[in-house]
Every structure is written in C-alpha cells, then in structure tokens.
Image (cartoon, rainbow, N blue to C red; front, side, top):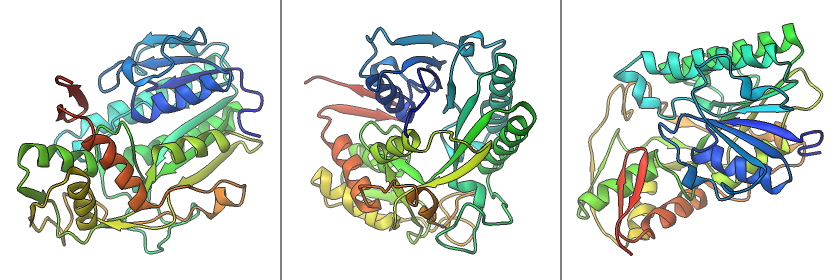
Length: 330
C-alpha cells in the first residue's frame, strides 16, 4: 500500500522539478518531510506547500557530512544530483561528484542513523544502446555510453551493496525522460527557449530521427509513491510511458503550442545522428513490472510533451534560461 509505514521522509533535491512535486505529494498525504537541497538548480518557489508545518527545509549539500537531518527518517528519497546528461561531455567531474560521491555520503548517513528505507532516482541511460526495445529491468549487459549513465549505474551498485550489508530496503527507479509543468531542462524546455529567441527558426540537434519515451511529472510522482520500498531488500523499476516520440514531432508540438511555424534546421549530429556524444538514439522502457502491481501511466509520450510545451508556452513574458525560469511583467 503506498506510503504505508511512512510518517517522516527526507527528500534530497526536494526543491527541484521532480523533488518538489514529490515533496508536495508526501505532505498532502500527511507525511512530515525534510527537504535537503543546496538550491543550485531548485527553488523553494517550486514547493506549493512550502508554508506547511509538516515541512522542514535544510539548505545543504548531500556531499556535506554528517547529514544529521536524516536521523529519525523512515525513508530517504534521493533525487539530488546532476540533472543534465550533456554536462559530462564538458566536465567529467560533475557526474562523479554530484551523483556518485553525493550518493555515497547519503548512504553512509543512512547507515549511521539507521534509516530503514532508501529510494533512488536513476535513469534509462544505464542501459546504454540496448538491443531489446522496450527494455526490461533485467536486461544485460548494462553498458552506459555517457558519464551520466555510468555514474548512475555506479550509484545503483552502491545502493545494492549498502542494502545487503546494512539491511536498508531500497528501490531504484530508472526514469524515461521526465517532462511536464515546471520542467526546467530537456528538449521541450530547450525548444521553447530557442523559439523565444528566434520564432522563425528551430535548430534540432542530431539527425531528427532520435526516438524516446517521455513520462509526465504527475505520472512519475504517482509511480514513485506507488512503488516505494516494500519487502524486497533491493528492487528496480522502470518508469516511463508505453510509447515513444521522435524529436521532430516534439518540435512540431512545441511550435503548435506557441502558435509558430518555424523552419526546422536539422544539424545532423554526431556518431550516426546523435544529438551529442553519449546521446542514446532510441529508448523505450518496458514498464510491465510495475504495471503488474497496478500502476499505469495516464499520459502518452506525445501527451506528456504537449502538457509541458503548453505550460511553458503559456507563461506570458517568461524568459527561459537553462535551469531557471524567471517571469517578466504580467
């Protein structure tokens, strides 16, 4: 049963895009939540229930020690980390520090303060160039092609080992591309930003044939609450939609929601049409495992993209920069 046995939770990255929605859902379910966030990409304004007496905010970094704020928690939802796959192509230290090192520090705090449950947001990129599409959780070998995917896989391995050695019941969620209202990075955000800058032209990285699965933020949070750590000492669930959408179709949806008719400039990309080195061209996750437990997404990939585009396009006077959304005027 969702949230059974959970009265106090810690959410790292709880002021970010996904973390803030999870924080709100937990508070609305009567859970006391401690949000741990360094506000490098998040904002307290993202949390609708920021004034709730059930919320404690700690402005800190997961790499800090000893992370005493986790003491007494029933579960840690670990969402903090580098949110952008492309960052590793220019600075390889980011994925190690923000993903691997931060996760180790948090696991050590969970061990020290005897937190019994741990939930981690991983990624479809751990599968690399999977030969099986849709890709199930037991697919192997796991051969990531980006430092981002490699760092997340390293985190999964550490969580598995800590779970077994110190009896921490843990769940790993491998996300498809998460989008929706409030998104602050990713292809939909980038397309809106580009078209705000030049309404007549939309640059599309890669060869335009990249095809991936997208999950709406509401579906994502529903699934995380639904599948939080149960009786298994360690478990893995894919979270995504039941279909895919190509990048050109995403461009068409964004342009439609913005009332524009730009010309598309497809740049061709690298390594056989990828948007950048480390970009997986085709991704769809097999979600039958969590579906057998009773969860199903409400929105398709195209619907998820359109909901995100409509939200961003509807913010009148918005100035979009990577990682932030500032509002000008009315």
